[in-house]
View: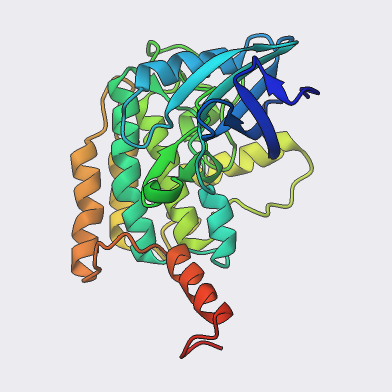
Length: 304
Protein backbone atom coordinates (compact mmCIF):
# COMPACT_ATOMS: atom_id res chain seq x y z
CA UNK A 1 0.00 0.00 0.00
CA UNK A 2 0.96 3.65 0.17
CA UNK A 3 4.43 3.89 1.69
CA UNK A 4 4.32 7.63 2.40
CA UNK A 5 2.64 9.08 5.43
CA UNK A 6 1.29 12.20 3.73
CA UNK A 7 -1.33 12.39 1.00
CA UNK A 8 -1.11 15.47 -1.22
CA UNK A 9 -0.05 17.55 1.76
CA UNK A 10 -3.64 17.31 3.01
CA UNK A 11 -3.78 14.20 5.19
CA UNK A 12 -1.44 12.28 7.43
CA UNK A 13 -1.95 8.54 7.75
CA UNK A 14 -2.29 7.37 11.34
CA UNK A 15 -3.29 3.70 11.39
CA UNK A 16 -4.70 0.88 9.30
CA UNK A 17 -8.42 0.12 9.63
CA UNK A 18 -8.41 -2.99 7.44
CA UNK A 19 -9.00 -4.28 3.95
CA UNK A 20 -12.16 -4.25 1.89
CA UNK A 21 -13.66 -6.97 -0.28
CA UNK A 22 -12.16 -5.81 -3.55
CA UNK A 23 -8.54 -5.03 -2.76
CA UNK A 24 -9.07 -1.55 -1.36
CA UNK A 25 -7.65 -0.62 2.02
CA UNK A 26 -8.99 1.61 4.77
CA UNK A 27 -6.77 3.90 6.79
CA UNK A 28 -7.42 6.39 9.55
CA UNK A 29 -5.75 9.72 9.10
CA UNK A 30 -6.21 13.34 10.02
CA UNK A 31 -6.58 16.58 8.14
CA UNK A 32 -3.31 18.50 8.45
CA UNK A 33 -5.12 21.85 8.61
CA UNK A 34 -8.08 21.15 10.85
CA UNK A 35 -6.74 18.15 12.78
CA UNK A 36 -10.03 16.34 12.11
CA UNK A 37 -9.83 12.55 11.96
CA UNK A 38 -10.94 11.06 8.64
CA UNK A 39 -11.34 7.69 7.00
CA UNK A 40 -9.25 7.14 3.88
CA UNK A 41 -10.08 4.56 1.24
CA UNK A 42 -7.20 3.64 -1.03
CA UNK A 43 -7.20 1.74 -4.33
CA UNK A 44 -4.33 1.00 -6.73
CA UNK A 45 -4.71 2.64 -10.14
CA UNK A 46 -4.25 -0.71 -11.88
CA UNK A 47 -7.72 -1.74 -10.63
CA UNK A 48 -9.91 -1.47 -13.73
CA UNK A 49 -12.76 -0.75 -13.67
CA UNK A 50 -12.33 1.28 -10.52
CA UNK A 51 -14.95 0.66 -7.84
CA UNK A 52 -13.57 3.64 -5.92
CA UNK A 53 -14.24 6.09 -8.75
CA UNK A 54 -17.77 4.74 -8.97
CA UNK A 55 -18.16 5.11 -5.20
CA UNK A 56 -16.91 8.71 -5.28
CA UNK A 57 -19.46 9.72 -7.91
CA UNK A 58 -22.31 8.07 -6.01
CA UNK A 59 -21.29 9.68 -2.71
CA UNK A 60 -21.41 13.06 -4.43
CA UNK A 61 -24.95 12.36 -5.64
CA UNK A 62 -26.07 11.13 -2.22
CA UNK A 63 -24.39 13.97 -0.33
CA UNK A 64 -26.46 15.38 2.52
CA UNK A 65 -28.64 12.32 3.05
CA UNK A 66 -29.13 11.06 6.60
CA UNK A 67 -26.92 8.04 7.26
CA UNK A 68 -24.66 8.73 4.26
CA UNK A 69 -20.99 9.34 5.19
CA UNK A 70 -19.83 12.86 4.51
CA UNK A 71 -17.47 13.00 1.55
CA UNK A 72 -14.43 15.31 1.94
CA UNK A 73 -11.94 14.88 -0.90
CA UNK A 74 -10.59 12.58 -3.58
CA UNK A 75 -7.37 12.57 -5.56
CA UNK A 76 -4.18 10.66 -6.19
CA UNK A 77 -1.00 9.84 -4.30
CA UNK A 78 1.61 8.05 -6.39
CA UNK A 79 0.02 4.96 -7.92
CA UNK A 80 -3.09 5.13 -5.76
CA UNK A 81 -6.55 6.62 -5.87
CA UNK A 82 -7.61 8.04 -2.51
CA UNK A 83 -10.94 9.11 -1.05
CA UNK A 84 -11.29 10.92 2.27
CA UNK A 85 -14.61 10.76 4.08
CA UNK A 86 -16.27 10.82 7.48
CA UNK A 87 -14.78 8.49 10.08
CA UNK A 88 -17.49 6.23 11.50
CA UNK A 89 -17.76 3.76 14.34
CA UNK A 90 -17.91 -0.06 14.23
CA UNK A 91 -20.00 -2.03 11.75
CA UNK A 92 -22.98 -4.18 12.71
CA UNK A 93 -21.06 -7.44 12.31
CA UNK A 94 -18.44 -6.27 14.82
CA UNK A 95 -21.17 -5.15 17.20
CA UNK A 96 -23.05 -8.43 16.78
CA UNK A 97 -19.98 -10.40 17.88
CA UNK A 98 -19.47 -7.96 20.76
CA UNK A 99 -23.05 -8.76 21.84
CA UNK A 100 -22.44 -12.53 21.81
CA UNK A 101 -23.77 -13.17 18.33
CA UNK A 102 -27.37 -11.96 18.62
CA UNK A 103 -29.26 -8.71 19.00
CA UNK A 104 -32.47 -8.27 20.94
CA UNK A 105 -35.72 -7.71 19.06
CA UNK A 106 -35.75 -4.12 20.27
CA UNK A 107 -32.32 -3.39 18.78
CA UNK A 108 -33.19 -5.08 15.46
CA UNK A 109 -36.43 -3.10 15.17
CA UNK A 110 -34.66 0.20 15.88
CA UNK A 111 -32.09 -0.67 13.21
CA UNK A 112 -34.83 -1.58 10.72
CA UNK A 113 -36.52 1.77 11.38
CA UNK A 114 -33.38 3.53 10.15
CA UNK A 115 -32.25 1.12 7.44
CA UNK A 116 -35.50 1.01 5.48
CA UNK A 117 -35.37 4.81 4.93
CA UNK A 118 -31.65 4.54 4.06
CA UNK A 119 -32.47 2.15 1.23
CA UNK A 120 -35.42 4.31 0.18
CA UNK A 121 -33.14 7.36 -0.09
CA UNK A 122 -30.55 5.47 -2.15
CA UNK A 123 -33.27 4.18 -4.48
CA UNK A 124 -34.86 7.64 -4.78
CA UNK A 125 -31.57 8.83 -6.26
CA UNK A 126 -31.74 6.09 -8.89
CA UNK A 127 -29.23 3.65 -7.40
CA UNK A 128 -29.32 0.09 -6.14
CA UNK A 129 -26.67 -0.88 -3.56
CA UNK A 130 -26.25 -4.58 -4.49
CA UNK A 131 -24.21 -5.48 -1.39
CA UNK A 132 -26.32 -4.85 1.71
CA UNK A 133 -24.68 -6.74 4.59
CA UNK A 134 -23.78 -6.08 8.26
CA UNK A 135 -20.17 -5.17 7.42
CA UNK A 136 -21.41 -2.32 5.22
CA UNK A 137 -23.71 -0.85 7.87
CA UNK A 138 -21.81 1.28 10.38
CA UNK A 139 -22.72 3.19 13.51
CA UNK A 140 -21.76 6.83 13.65
CA UNK A 141 -19.00 8.18 15.84
CA UNK A 142 -19.35 10.48 18.84
CA UNK A 143 -22.50 12.58 18.73
CA UNK A 144 -23.69 10.57 15.71
CA UNK A 145 -23.44 7.31 17.65
CA UNK A 146 -27.17 6.60 17.35
CA UNK A 147 -27.23 6.88 13.55
CA UNK A 148 -26.75 3.90 11.25
CA UNK A 149 -24.82 4.61 8.04
CA UNK A 150 -24.83 2.80 4.72
CA UNK A 151 -21.30 2.52 3.31
CA UNK A 152 -19.18 0.63 0.77
CA UNK A 153 -21.23 1.58 -2.26
CA UNK A 154 -18.54 0.66 -4.80
CA UNK A 155 -20.80 -2.08 -6.20
CA UNK A 156 -23.81 0.24 -6.43
CA UNK A 157 -25.09 1.22 -9.85
CA UNK A 158 -27.94 3.04 -11.48
CA UNK A 159 -31.08 0.96 -11.75
CA UNK A 160 -30.95 -0.74 -15.14
CA UNK A 161 -33.58 -2.15 -17.46
CA UNK A 162 -35.65 -5.29 -16.81
CA UNK A 163 -34.52 -8.35 -18.70
CA UNK A 164 -30.81 -7.62 -18.36
CA UNK A 165 -28.66 -10.40 -16.93
CA UNK A 166 -25.48 -10.47 -14.86
CA UNK A 167 -22.83 -13.05 -15.66
CA UNK A 168 -22.21 -13.96 -12.05
CA UNK A 169 -23.54 -13.25 -8.60
CA UNK A 170 -22.86 -9.65 -7.58
CA UNK A 171 -22.83 -9.03 -3.85
CA UNK A 172 -22.30 -11.33 -0.88
CA UNK A 173 -23.69 -14.87 -1.18
CA UNK A 174 -25.07 -15.04 2.37
CA UNK A 175 -27.28 -11.96 1.92
CA UNK A 176 -27.85 -11.84 -1.85
CA UNK A 177 -31.39 -11.89 -3.21
CA UNK A 178 -32.82 -14.82 -5.14
CA UNK A 179 -32.67 -12.74 -8.33
CA UNK A 180 -28.99 -11.99 -7.73
CA UNK A 181 -28.32 -15.74 -7.55
CA UNK A 182 -30.25 -16.25 -10.79
CA UNK A 183 -28.22 -13.59 -12.58
CA UNK A 184 -31.17 -11.24 -12.99
CA UNK A 185 -30.44 -7.51 -13.08
CA UNK A 186 -30.99 -6.13 -9.58
CA UNK A 187 -33.47 -3.42 -8.66
CA UNK A 188 -34.68 -1.88 -5.35
CA UNK A 189 -36.63 -5.03 -4.44
CA UNK A 190 -33.31 -6.92 -4.26
CA UNK A 191 -31.74 -4.47 -1.80
CA UNK A 192 -34.81 -4.84 0.39
CA UNK A 193 -34.62 -8.63 0.24
CA UNK A 194 -30.96 -8.48 1.27
CA UNK A 195 -31.88 -6.12 4.11
CA UNK A 196 -34.49 -8.65 5.25
CA UNK A 197 -31.84 -11.38 5.46
CA UNK A 198 -29.61 -8.99 7.43
CA UNK A 199 -32.39 -8.27 9.94
CA UNK A 200 -33.17 -11.96 10.47
CA UNK A 201 -29.44 -12.70 10.80
CA UNK A 202 -29.03 -10.01 13.45
CA UNK A 203 -32.04 -11.29 15.36
CA UNK A 204 -31.33 -15.02 15.20
CA UNK A 205 -27.54 -14.98 14.99
CA UNK A 206 -27.45 -17.09 11.83
CA UNK A 207 -29.28 -17.91 8.61
CA UNK A 208 -30.49 -21.40 7.57
CA UNK A 209 -27.89 -21.64 4.81
CA UNK A 210 -24.85 -21.08 6.99
CA UNK A 211 -22.50 -23.99 7.70
CA UNK A 212 -23.52 -26.11 4.71
CA UNK A 213 -21.33 -29.16 4.03
CA UNK A 214 -20.74 -29.07 0.28
CA UNK A 215 -17.90 -29.94 -2.09
CA UNK A 216 -17.62 -26.75 -4.10
CA UNK A 217 -18.52 -23.08 -4.16
CA UNK A 218 -20.96 -23.77 -7.00
CA UNK A 219 -22.77 -26.42 -4.96
CA UNK A 220 -22.85 -24.06 -2.01
CA UNK A 221 -24.48 -21.34 -4.06
CA UNK A 222 -27.06 -23.80 -5.43
CA UNK A 223 -27.93 -25.01 -1.92
CA UNK A 224 -28.24 -21.46 -0.62
CA UNK A 225 -30.48 -20.52 -3.53
CA UNK A 226 -32.75 -23.52 -2.90
CA UNK A 227 -33.14 -22.56 0.74
CA UNK A 228 -33.89 -18.96 -0.10
CA UNK A 229 -36.52 -20.05 -2.62
CA UNK A 230 -38.38 -22.01 0.07
CA UNK A 231 -37.65 -19.99 3.23
CA UNK A 232 -40.48 -21.32 5.40
CA UNK A 233 -39.46 -24.93 4.80
CA UNK A 234 -35.94 -24.11 5.98
CA UNK A 235 -37.00 -22.17 9.08
CA UNK A 236 -35.97 -18.69 8.01
CA UNK A 237 -38.79 -17.30 10.16
CA UNK A 238 -38.66 -19.96 12.90
CA UNK A 239 -37.77 -17.64 15.78
CA UNK A 240 -38.92 -14.36 14.26
CA UNK A 241 -42.25 -12.57 14.73
CA UNK A 242 -44.82 -12.82 11.91
CA UNK A 243 -43.90 -9.34 10.69
CA UNK A 244 -40.64 -10.63 9.25
CA UNK A 245 -42.48 -13.11 7.02
CA UNK A 246 -44.87 -10.36 5.91
CA UNK A 247 -41.85 -8.20 5.07
CA UNK A 248 -40.49 -10.92 2.77
CA UNK A 249 -43.92 -11.64 1.30
CA UNK A 250 -44.16 -8.03 0.14
CA UNK A 251 -40.60 -7.77 -1.17
CA UNK A 252 -40.77 -11.10 -3.00
CA UNK A 253 -44.06 -10.12 -4.67
CA UNK A 254 -42.55 -7.13 -6.46
CA UNK A 255 -41.78 -6.97 -10.16
CA UNK A 256 -38.50 -5.49 -11.38
CA UNK A 257 -39.87 -2.01 -12.01
CA UNK A 258 -42.05 -1.83 -8.88
CA UNK A 259 -40.80 0.18 -5.94
CA UNK A 260 -41.15 -1.36 -2.48
CA UNK A 261 -43.79 0.16 -0.23
CA UNK A 262 -41.24 1.50 2.22
CA UNK A 263 -43.89 3.07 4.47
CA UNK A 264 -45.73 -0.23 4.77
CA UNK A 265 -42.52 -2.13 5.60
CA UNK A 266 -41.52 0.43 8.18
CA UNK A 267 -44.99 0.42 9.76
CA UNK A 268 -44.86 -3.36 10.10
CA UNK A 269 -41.89 -3.10 12.43
CA UNK A 270 -43.07 0.07 14.16
CA UNK A 271 -46.36 -1.61 15.09
CA UNK A 272 -44.47 -4.63 16.44
CA UNK A 273 -42.23 -2.29 18.41
CA UNK A 274 -45.23 -0.60 20.03
CA UNK A 275 -46.98 -3.89 20.82
CA UNK A 276 -43.84 -5.05 22.62
CA UNK A 277 -44.01 -1.82 24.67
CA UNK A 278 -40.40 -0.96 23.84
CA UNK A 279 -39.14 2.53 24.52
CA UNK A 280 -37.59 4.26 21.49
CA UNK A 281 -34.63 5.57 23.48
CA UNK A 282 -31.82 4.73 21.02
CA UNK A 283 -30.33 2.44 23.65
CA UNK A 284 -28.98 -0.47 21.61
CA UNK A 285 -27.67 -3.74 23.02
CA UNK A 286 -24.05 -2.61 22.65
CA UNK A 287 -24.88 0.64 24.48
CA UNK A 288 -26.00 -1.35 27.51
CA UNK A 289 -22.97 -3.66 27.39
CA UNK A 290 -20.54 -0.76 27.16
CA UNK A 291 -22.23 0.95 30.09
CA UNK A 292 -22.13 -2.20 32.23
CA UNK A 293 -18.47 -2.72 31.38
CA UNK A 294 -17.62 0.86 32.30
CA UNK A 295 -19.47 0.54 35.62
CA UNK A 296 -17.73 -2.77 36.30
CA UNK A 297 -14.29 -1.21 35.68
CA UNK A 298 -15.13 1.59 38.08
CA UNK A 299 -16.33 -0.88 40.71
CA UNK A 300 -19.88 0.42 40.62
CA UNK A 301 -22.76 -1.13 42.56
CA UNK A 302 -24.73 -4.07 41.27
CA UNK A 303 -22.05 -5.34 38.84
CA UNK A 304 -19.71 -8.29 39.21
